Image 1 (cartoon, rainbow, N blue to C red):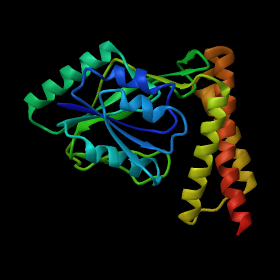
Image 2 (image 1 turned 180 degrees about the horizontal axis):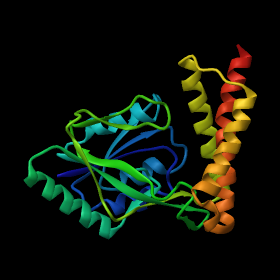
Image 3 (image 1 turned 180 degrees about the vertical axis):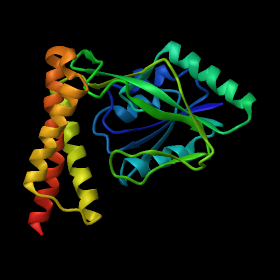
Length: 254
């Protein structure tokens, strides 16, 4: 049995397509928080296990809440703006069946292909983008990070195997989506680092931006993605500057 889990907030434009892309599984668990659009109404009309939370503990703890509600032997973690293709669904099914016959602990990384403003980005450090998403329940947990959470395997003996078919990521349909996500991630990242005692300077923020652009545009060949590649690399530079600038401002306030 495979359980798909996802956390959502204001995902009315994505939720139906996302859930339908994992309908081949035996269970879909959704944990919702703070939606002001039709996300909850859409979820209630889908064949899912829905839970709503009044607080927001961060991405990692919220995903662990969804994980705790899953009943399947295997768990597929997915975001609302991602889609599982028919080819990937078949590969996941085969991989799980083979893993059950092998007998040792194994988890699976899935290559992710991201779309930016209608264009698939194949460089810029975005591709290949392997994400650890498929694992046996009880053998992994999400970190407690507010943002950029990681799936942590509980045993060092667990082998990680890479699948071949990509998970489609419709993360940034418009520049507005990017700016909105950038602001939220920058603030959460800065607050988390500040709480851990980290401080920074405006020079570090500027150097991080320049380094991010050169790395993604030159060394990770973002220039091969044309105009959108340049836009992605420029925005990644701004993201690097933004999170350190947020941290710098927190330090100044104190």
